Length: 154
Image (cartoon, rainbow, N blue to C red; front, side, top):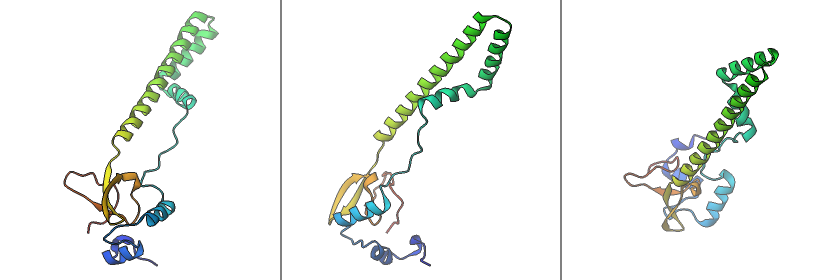
């Protein structure tokens, strides 16, 4: 059974990932990206608009209004029923629009805050998107930097 990677010495980790003080070369980067994927958190599948719309109808107050609309139908008061149904649909539509706008705003913020990372590759210190970091990369951190990936301080 192999020891956890964080318990190994620096030289052993460098040997496992074929990393040197000159960093990884392009071929190694491609290989590790194919094996491990990008340095990104996987995102859950977003709900469709129809699901978001119907989720707006799951509130207790909405259920009470639906019961009121049913009572109104059975009592023969069609105008009250139409008003209640109109208010429920309008509420669900507005809630759905707000939800979709909030998701788009959040996505825009995620794209704006994509941190950069300084790594050693092909013997040169370069700056890349943090999503391009692969296993075996040597990162350079300075005061105030966002730590762009899990790693070991050496």
